[in-house]
Length: 109
Image 1: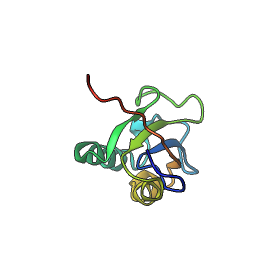
Image 2: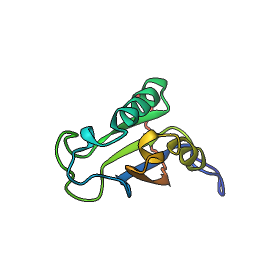
Image 3: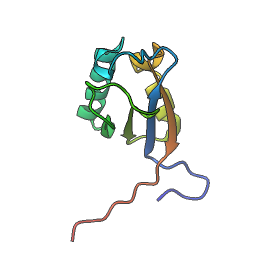
Image 4: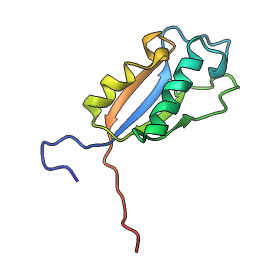
């Protein structure tokens, strides 16, 4: 648990359609989709991303304004920097809201 005034070491990233999201196409067909998937896979494989995924099938059209969620094992400050390297974010297909996430863990009995 962080000390008062200390930033939590985990972040919740809410992924939304960006200004260049093509509403006629599902996530898998968006421009920069392959780069985004590779970015996510790289961070899951390295352990930086604890969990990540869309909130609906990636091959269906978006229904709503939330594309997916990513939980990163870094501070919100670092998560903002890190997500700015996602090709779909820099390309405008996706936009992110980064929040400090106060993760609760329970030690095995």
